[in-house]
Length: 316
Image (tube, rainbow, N blue to C red; front, side):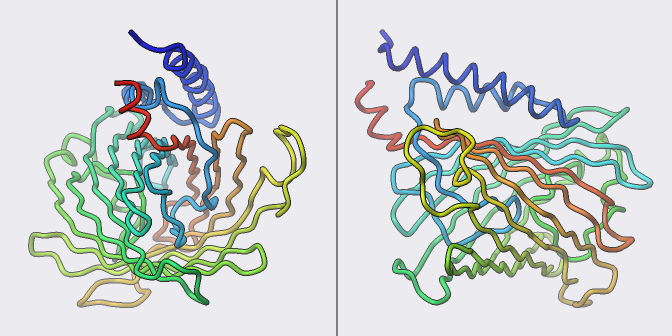
C-alpha cells in the first residue's frame, strides 16, 4: 500500500505536469506525454528538493548534482529554419549524483517535424567527473558521453564541426535510417566570482564509424538577480530569478578546423525557481551567420529529488 506522502507526491506531480504542458504548448512547442509520463513515474511519491543550478541551456558550469539526489528535467527546442520544415524537439533528462565528484545522466530524445511525423531519435549517457573538489580560481570538470542517435535528431544539445541549417532539412523517414554512434568529450572550465559564474566548454566529438573528430565550444556568464534570500515563501522575489547569456558554435573538424562553414548562436537566458523547487529556464537563440538556423527557442523545466535511493528504500 502506498503511503500518504507517496499519493500526495503523485497528485502534486500531476499538477506540475499539467503546468509544464500548458507552458510548453503556449510557447509553440509540442509536449510529448510519453516523456512526461516517464518523468512522472520517477517523481511520484518522492519529495522535492530545492534545485541548485545555473540558467544555462547549453553550457555546463562546474556544479555537479548533490550525492544521492536525482534531477528530472524536460528540455525542448523548436524553430522554423529557412529552407527546412518547422520542428519541435523534446529531451527527458535523468541526472543522478553518484558521488561528490561524479554525476551521471541519461537522455531520451524525440522530435516532431511539421507535415512529417513524430519520431524517437535516440539516447545518450553522460558522465561528469570533477578532479578538484575544492573551489579554485578555475574549476575543471571532465565530461564523457556516449550517443546512440539517428539522423532525425533535432535536440541540438551542442553544436560541433560544420553543423548547420542544412542538417535540419531532411525528412524523418530517411533520417531514422542513419545511425550515429558517437563519443563526445568536453573540458569544462568554470569560475564563481562575486555572484557571477563564468563557464567555458571545449567540445571534441567523433562518430565511431569513419568520421573525423569534430570540435565546438560553448561560453556562458550568469548571475542571480539577488544574492541574499528574503524571509518567507516568496515566489516572485528577486533571488528566485537568474539571468545570463550563452554563445556556442562549431569549430570545424580535424581536416578543416576553424570558423569556415560553421554555425554560431547567441542566447540570453532567464531562470525562475518556484518555492517548491521547480525550475524553469527559457532562452531564445539567435543565429549569427547564414549557416545557422535563424532563431531557436529553448526551454527547460526541472525538479530535483533529494536522496532518492534512501527514499525508495524507506518506501519499500
